[in-house]
Image 1 (cartoon, helix red, strand yellow):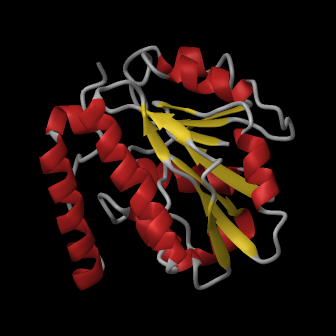
Image 2 (cartoon, helix red, strand yellow; image 1 turned 45 degrees about the vertical axis):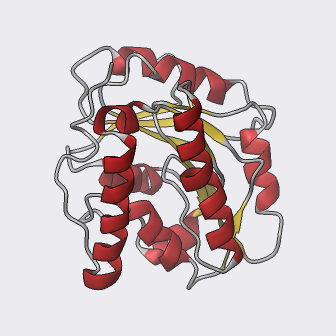
Length: 232
């Protein structure tokens, strides 16, 4: 399991504790840190089987670095502000038992928040992904997905030149290699700090414009989109 981090001292402990308590135990935890300036690394070292440091090129580059450093059949991705149930790795492993499956992803649930937060996540991070996957358009979140490593490398991994939607782009490219599956049981609970700080409407509109940019030009540019988020 690959966990990219950057100044996540307030959330990384919960994330890695959850990964350590999995019912399916044949896995390793790889943390890729972007040279955090807080206690993220000190905390992560207590749980990680392997600790790596990226070159400040962003989350996509960090994930790609981690994939190149392992030799496992399956590579799974979780963010440092995200928590999974104890059956998560078991669910991932079972999903790949189906023939020709190269990728699997699940819904994201909000960590706390009110009715509006739960509604936004249900529509955007669950319902729409179920519907789009049903018609063959998979858009797995980088905070909750897994791929066969050989297929991932064949597809070229996450595009490091995209400032956002690199996870959606990878999902689309993986479809050319094999079958993908949306698995509702593979859920993950993630921080709502991004939508809280930017606002629900602004966040949704930025993603909509990002999709248009990606489909029209093949690129999305918004430097600092992830790392500008405050970690409190």
